[in-house]
Image (cartoon, rainbow, N blue to C red; front, side, top):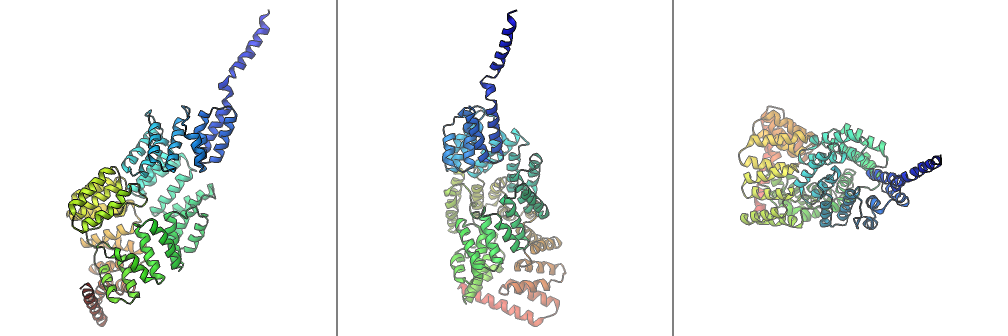
Length: 590
């Protein structure tokens, strides 16, 4: 009989015992999960508040330090992040997250060795998550270990083939290695898993634009604005698209809506320079582009635009002072030679002008200079200085020394696509196209831009493999359909091979893409069109109007006028002009 009250007490005691520390901590664990969710969506403030509430609820610092440190890191407070992360006081459940955050903190503070150690500890158990492998891959890529970065991306997808960050990273690498068309499926798969992910949407929109799918790109950018009207990337992408379409005013208004988020980036500085040029503010354009070229001295597009801006603002002396040395190199582009030639014309030095304009009219030599290491590369200062040293050695005929130096730098930075391209350039310029092509092909597994493809084509042609060169260019164009230089080069090769219809189609595309303002493209089109029996005189006249001082264009127009049986006087005058220009060039060279 006396047992019944005791039974009730026992039941109450059981309930109390059930509410032991693990059960009492349940609200705290919910707050940790809340902090993790905030971090996953990039909200450092919400994560910090949830972590503090969890700590107040009795959750241990070992369970909190990873999320609290990452929250501070997201907000840019590196000192506060160090207090949480530096001791590495992480629970088993949060250890990977904490070490990932610690590695990012070390990267922010420039200590790559410490970051490597943090990632090594995170991978010590051999079971890294997809997100950890993505972090490792991005770190390796930034460190110049490009091939190891690709391996990390593959490992991330093996860990979780549906992880949005892993799919995004793989898409970015595919875009670099193959082209935008090949990258799109990766981003589309990522968006199937996370349709409102702004980072994935931004990459998808940018890649659509590169693939020439402007309407689709605009649709995605507007969706980004609908998700978050404050997101600057959506406005920046639309600004780039507006600029490409020739709507400079709209592009400027869209760029202003980024609220300066991209002001310090090379892409925004280049875009601003282009917009100022189109607005007729050549001096402002030159200021923008001067800043960019100082930060990226090997950025060819920025350098050419700066030359144009200086020339348009009347600073011919500035063009000569800044670009004459580059124009004197044997691999100088026709555009640069034309800019320097026109600068000399503005200065009244016609013989000097003729020397550069004549070179601009000639076909570019098959042999090229050593490529610069990619802007922003982390392959190391020695790789950067090796470019200058190798150019000097090759110019002086010291081929054996150049090869030995390239091999040494290659061993120092094994796995770097930048350094592989450097080694390929030395082999190509030393007359070994087979070796160059082997090294280029390995680099192309990671980064296949047009400058590399152009060199691979040169190597193929040096070995007499014209068909392989055409196939390589055609494949590149399939994956990079907006590449004007690739279309122009393939068009010229097709013309040389007698494939006139293909040549006209490719050169016509390149010509239309440049607004029909490139005199050399117009000259190519007129020459090939004439061979095909087309009425090409009007095209040649347009080329001549754009560049009257170019002897090749003048000669082409003269031949076409003669062939038409009309304008004999004009044709003779043009041929006489070509002869005078050639004589002037010879005198200038003596």
